[in-house]
Image (spheres, rainbow, N blue to C red):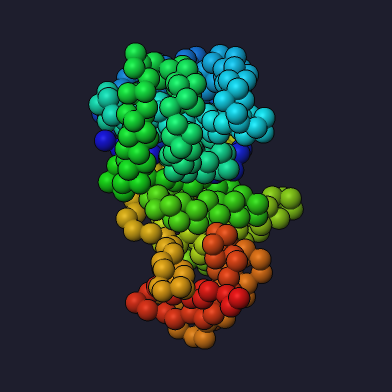
Length: 399
């Protein structure tokens, strides 16, 4: 069983890459489901096939689905929210607390998680390819198991009365004759899904990018947070690369065939610069590129061409990279950020930190890291290079 999740900033081409990956997987003989968790669905447009909220076969071995999250939430949430709030207030809760307790945060994420879990655990598919929502929403979805557990624990702390009222909501989400008996199973299912999504033998995360400044920054931030939660990233996908740009090594990218058009020549120069950044910032992940196309990537034929452009003869469902592109470990009261780096000549390491950005310079090699809040609140106190891995230490700040 394989689950492949594509994520990135809105508009970078996640949907087309997910659809192309799924189509190629199906052509290789794997029973494959491609599913969209984005509220603003475009998967049906990409496949050029009408889709439903349940899997529909759109080609041999290929099934597609657009999870209709909003309808489920709207149908069951509006009436229950007011009812639960009133009942909780009658039990002595303040209005503010009652209204807060009447809302389960991330209902959309819970529904999406449960759909994915259902498809992954039923054994109906060899592979599930997920066209994820833009990066921010996907990060919420992936952290939802912890948030959901915390929220359920709060309900338990209020006792049986509050649990009786939440049962009506949970019955709408997961029908069960005995809702109270079904709640522990729901929690176990979410926990099990989290285990599946963090298992590198089953799940892979791939960050989709365009060679543009804001896109690269958001993609780098996504990789940082995926690493923080131990979700296995196995590749980066760069879409819409202009011709004439060649890489000679990690970060050494140049325009070898400048366009005769001044505007395109400028775009080539900009893309070459950001492709160099991508190679440095996403090292040691493999990076797949797709060429700029003058046609819309719509329909099976063009999606099949995109898959070949990206992966060649390789199976896109394989695990392309094992390990962590970066890791954060505790050593006493300090945190240590560990970064695999390419074969650079070891010179004095220069660290510059501005807010949540860490700039690393070793000779001619430069890399920018977007730090999670746990590290952004501390200062970098030095770095050492050991067996191809840079160790940057963040000691606890003095009171």
